[in-house]
Image (cartoon, rainbow, N blue to C red; front, side):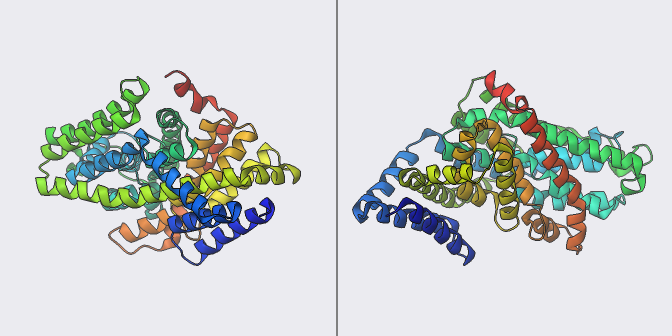
Length: 439
């Protein structure tokens, strides 16, 4: 079949299947198999290619990171250590303006990094942090926005499931991706904190009771050792995983195993029963199975794109249309933001990265810089109206009925700051590449 016609048919069929509600994995697999069948005019070759892709991908050592990091997140979530981390951070920042909101940024970022899912972090901190902020009369849009905004940051800071997805699909070192996300992740967290402190100073009515001595004794009481130990163990676990990868002590898969073991110890110390541990392992299996299927179908989709010449054809179209590196990046950014209003981050990566990453690299973008930029923008899409998924998660998780418009209004500053951070990464790629180049 003519490559141009095959490209148009495959992309059109994929979009149509997604729009009518066919699951992402099935859509990718069906389009890939049909495309290979039409390309070779042989069902046997198409089926054999699918088997070859599945065999080669599943034997990859790095695939073990996915269930192990999910187990780590499940154990930490079951232990209730997220609440202790928030409490410890909150009281440790007693004299910082807007300290409840700042503690939410720090705690939510760390918990999202451990759990690997921004939606889970948003739901958890909606129940933990929002009641505290409203108790001390924080502005409601501000309280809602900081939860939705900070939940995205964990996707940049290892261990991150999205970075693993990106690495598997593009064959970039997952260890390098993990390390590349550290500086940008903490940079964006710093921008969020600066915004909160500035807002609290300019508009103290939005974040009252931020001095410390004037607050009710319930938040001024000293920290107990159980809270310090629990929160400190989480911080130590994150530092061990990140430091071990950067220092060359562990491969990403070994770091995932160490993280899962450390999370098991924390869960047992916090009183989680063996039944709870078993539930966490079973839950990890239930979560991992569809992820593996999605990755296999995305891998088959990538093989089809390469074999059929679709990527070369798309690149030729883009060049002939007069796109330069900047206009290409803007176009990809708009696509990601639009998709973020309808789909979750994993689905967006599976659908777009096999196409976008090779094209961006052919236009001169560093693979690591493009990866971190892509994760940032894809996560920003989860806040984009009218269907930003994180906004709906926060609205549905807070223990009171709040207008959706207030969540969107509160999330706007964080959306803008993330876009600003994306621009900074493109202008200063060393923010991404410095640590990986010095591993």
